[in-house]
Length: 256
Image (cartoon, rainbow, N blue to C red; front, side, top):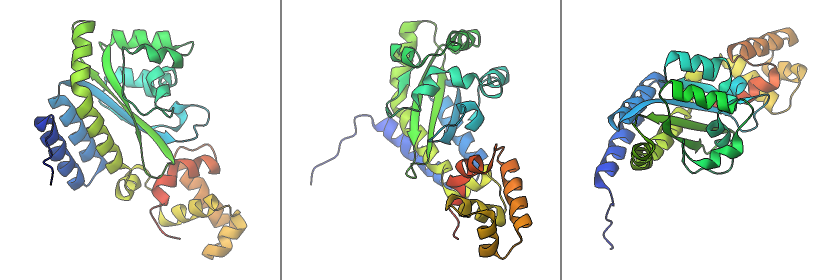
């Protein structure tokens, strides 16, 4: 039997320790706290994580479910005012390329929009010049995601070195975190729908009309319509198709 030698035993032990703690985390908030703390121990300044349907509708901002430890003013700009759509690294996370990308990487130019310059100037204003974005995926293939982790450095050379040194652990931790929060018990915390609301969305996904769903569930047409409207409101969805798209990762965990 060949002996396995780890190139970086310290990183391996750190990943294993993080994985064990994450497995035992019972809530999304605790999982996020563990992830944030693990990054902080590595020297990270702040981080953001988000996921969205594989087929994004109008914009990432209208679809994303996100958590962030970035400054609140930056979060307002980035998430509430929609500048995530002009973040070239968020756009990169939508592509098939799943490799980490440094915030100094010139490849990001390919994903710039007319407002990206303002966005990147804002990064500098908040002291967020250096970092790495990790695209993440899950087994369902319904959702895309990514995490952006910011580091502090005094110049480009130092920033590049810090990011390069941190990236292997950040990539492992990001994938473990994403995998954990996409599990059914966690997804139900993101989308606290009633059983009936989940059932209605599942049957919509299967192609049934309101009348057919009503027959299946022994409900009136009006009651089904109410459940669907309530689900869409809880999910901040524009319509029934959007509600299904946002909730599919969660509702697929229950049976029909």
